[in-house]
Length: 334
Ligand SMILES: *Cc1c(COP(=O)(O)O)cnc(C)c1O
Image: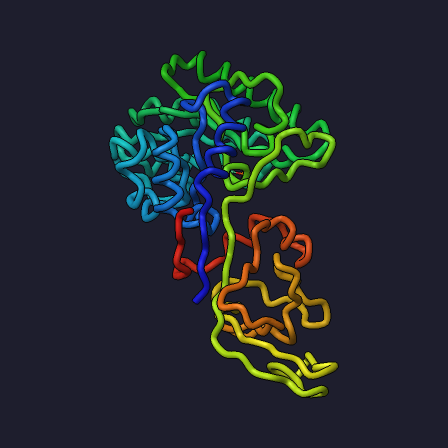
């Protein structure tokens, strides 16, 4: 199986860039959902802790338990709410508020325009009333932007809505509430951050997904993917490689199989438009479940060190490239 390396220096560089935007490390919550976007939950959580990060965001309680001892607060985006001194739970609907146990630490998610999760603007009063009646411990109020990476007015309209929500929360008398709305894109483009916290995901891993007009923050990809050689053979001209024989050797050539395939979460792609590795080697023929073939005899090859570049090739986004990588791939800190 392939290997992933995680570059600590680059990760700290990215966190520093974000801290420059927020004004302090305390205001950064690292988003570690989905195995830290495929980077490795435990490793990334522990590095974030070493940097001084105190807040993390994960998908569910299973992920939260793995990293619980490393952070002051772990926000769980979507799971059954329990009472816990470290975990806080996003309230995605009025129904969730009704089901939550007394004293649970919760963060009200408000739908300011993305229309995915959260309580509608028109229901915020009802939600706050319920939270009060049920004696839930409201530690946060949040919203999520649908287009922080686009040049449009939508972001400003959502921010205006969120401001109204803040006023309501104040009016209801809730205190010590952390307000947060910024994902990576909103954080990277902000000029004067004034909220309590950001939820930074893709940027901490080293990808700036903003269009180039905003492109002033340079980030460094933390993850590299390597594959190791399994077997080498010599092909005669006109011999083919792999399923369907899609690659036909134009001349005598030496090729090797490497231990990476779509079973490891690598994108299969089209053999007619092969992915070219970070070292300039095109994948020959079809990607198998556990193997690819390259014209190389090296023991180890660097497949990818910039998921954004690879994503462009496959017509997807950096998020999907890294998040898909199998949990079973060994992660090594460098
Ligand atoms: C995933 C997620 C984020 C992080 O988004 P990035 O674009 O990766 O920074 C922030 N907030 C919520 C609610 C999320 O689900």
